[in-house]
Length: 598
Image (cartoon, rainbow, N blue to C red; front, side):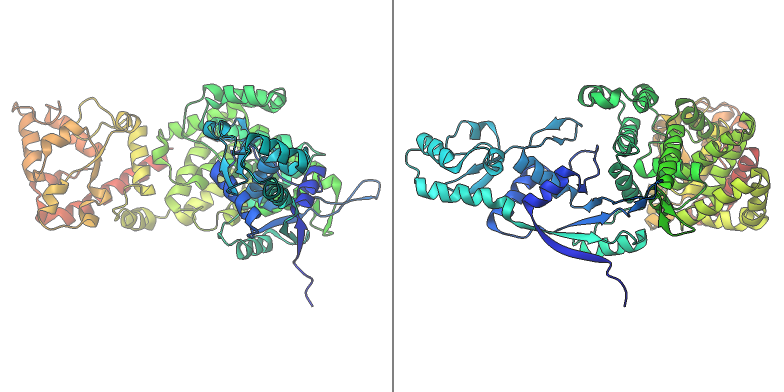
């Protein structure tokens, strides 16, 4: 008979809140904003008052760990689902502050109308209306007796019935005597099982990531500075996206600003590059994989719990070592010089805008590779070359699109056990054969998805090679990407639509170029065999209609760098499919040359 995976018990709300206050149940401290708005907190109070169920909390007990002296330390229960409800209860019932969307601590004050028996979020109008009790927290907490509360209320509202008000306030106070279900998961369950249970129980179908579990494990371990380490992760990720948050952080969390973590992330206050804006999932994955030589975050959760994979027991020493190792990985990730150097490597490969990067997993592993090669003391030049090349390789092959964790795990072990040159040579021979360049890549360019990773690599190649925009004399593709220039059609969209072509045909990526809008406007709905010949006339002393190119050899060079076949001079709608085939082959050839130049 299989042992139970979890137990379900009903507890009084006051017992749940007491267990949280005592630390018996650990709520991982969330430095991200409280997601509920005040009206949802109000509705929760109303549901409890009316006696409606408010769902279950889910806690996962940390396993008991063996200490050095042979004693056993009992693991805490970690709340993994229900944090928003518990935070709402603490805000309304206890009067605790919450972190709002501006990362400031505020009170959510819930008012109560004892005659109408309704709840409302406190506002100035309620503050002027004596019929409302402005804050339910002092009432429910019992700081003031019911008799005194009733007397005070009826003194301000002479028409109120004392007996009725007394009964209503007593009912309000009984909110903490309502029951709340707590599902306690067994400590030996693996993450996959916990995730499955979570999904089946959670009616909203919310999925917790392994990073969420890892963050919970981090925050619940006070012995090894877990709560502060979790703050570090959350704050870094928020600062990376919103540098202006720096001043708010200084104002609102003085204790954290005195830590070494804060000093090591302060450089972000002046960082506005959005090429790599990691979230906590990215930061954890990179720090863990680069430092532990493992790719599965489930292993991190186990190691932070003290898991000995050989004996299948839990040891405090393993937890201590794992926290120290993770901290080192996180500090490496946050290091200003390393982070900026990594961004410069991406830029040097032509990835000058976040719009060109659609694979966060490729981005994460590229940073893992950078940190790993750095720790292996490769030269700066070799690191740049291998990181650039691996990043583009992983995008072209879709390496991390299927089962990224398993692939991360495989790749980091290979890179740790053999030279990156040997591994990369083997991978290129296996994945980038002539068949890939001459057939597979060309076929992959047969798409109407403008965010296609292959088309983005092509644009990166153009940016790296400092190509000019289509029909432009001075404006580069890099300029057009940087300043959010537009992608336009070589065979104009309206022209093709007039022949009954569908969106999926006229929007083929092989029909796209980076082009100045004013040139595109001049082209209008003209067929290529019309406006290309006008371009040629322009180069032979004719009137300038499209940009400033006035030399035929310069026009041909511009067409070459934009992979436009010379046959286009004689092409109209009848030859559109032929044009697409020719251009896909030219784009694929350009990507190949670019790749081997990295």
